[in-house]
Amino acid sequence: MLLKRFNRIQRLSHFFLVVTFLIQTGTGFSRLFITTDFGRSLSRLFGGYETAIVIHFWVGVLLIAGFLVHSIYMLSKINWKNPVKSILSPDSLVLNLQDAQHLLKKILWTIGKGSLPKLDRWAYWEKFDYWAVYWGLPLLAITGIMLKFPLLTTLVLPGWVLNIAALLHRAEAILAASYIFIVHFFIGHLRPSCFPMHEAMFSGSVHLDEALKEKPAWVERLKKEGKLELSMAKPPARWYRGLYFVFGYTALGFGLYMLINGIYYSRYIRLH
Image (cartoon, rainbow, N blue to C red; front, side, top):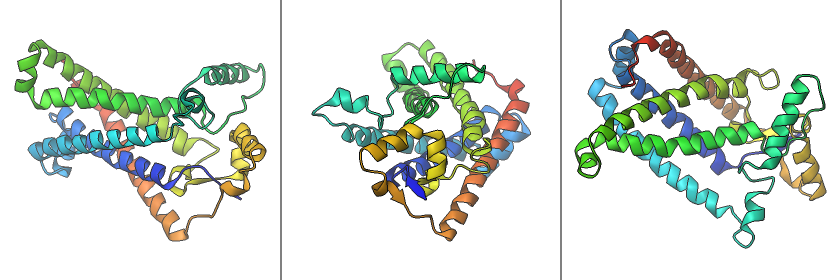
């Protein structure tokens, strides 16, 4: 039996973010590592050094637009008649005190003291994943625009601010790529419970047995609210499942390629 976890809009948003993030990382790394064979090979992949810069800018514009659309979508999901209760509900991605308690219980369980926390729809690490991306995008967008239009920037701000913008843009990009290609890839692909791929973000559903094991509080709440049967989902078509496995592992392979080479050529990075 399958339990619906992500709707179509959420899955399309994830697909959009995967594609744009990989393009931005590839084009950004092509410039960051242009003095190396790795950087030059990435540059050729995107049509050359100048073309890669143009792609980086316009995909960045697309990401900003996506960020704004997503923000409007998330605001529309809030029950404005009772916003506090809505924002702090179990279906909300906003971090709360219970997440801190779950983290503490997990740490205690790891050292052999206590039991595992009973997680609801969103685990604390999933919320952290979400907000790390959400707050990182405006930083990259603002600093990226400043660097793209330095003359306009210096009409308002002193020239030395551009050095800080360059430092922040590169540091945040490296941090984001490292986190996604190490932590997020491990959680999504390499954990024993989901190897070789956690299909939920592509199929939109999880097995009920998996949900009972990883998110027991969520299943219990759906039962109590009488929504469990309504939340059941059909399995994805075989052709679609094959398609998202190919896409997922292509993205994984490209990400690991950039991670390994990024680490190997890290001595060539200059953040100033």
